[in-house]
Length: 195
Image (tube, rainbow, N blue to C red; front, side):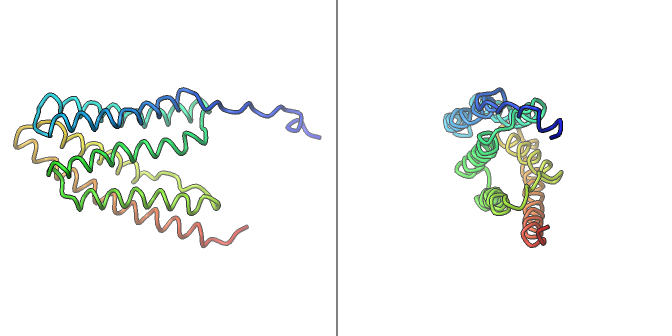
């Protein structure tokens, strides 16, 4: 018998913890954000500013809850599921609304959402074989998407408003490239010989 056998198992992480509460708050912010965009009609300046700020705060909480969970050992099954759902709900709602109000071509929204859902399904597909960790490209993709969406939401005057499509073009390019990278990583993981 070793010392490790005598040590008590660490206590289970409670589902109600700081990281999960922040994730839940982000989920609640999604309908609030949607209501603000609808109230703005993408023409009312004050509502657009409020929607943009809400989107920015909600996006920032994604970094905060992940940091807290890792830093303080508060990773839970709920957090692993709820966190990506909150992210996809927020980004997806923003993209659909921008396309609905003719600010963003529908094909851009479809490409990004197909990639996001596809990568999520890939992660479940290989979960028995390992975890596909977020890559640096994936983090750049997220940052570009958040910046592009925020740029579209904020009532910039011309020519500043014309910068938005360029940021979104970069976001789409990185989104597609990282989606292909995740696909190749998932295929390699599934085809690797088991030890």
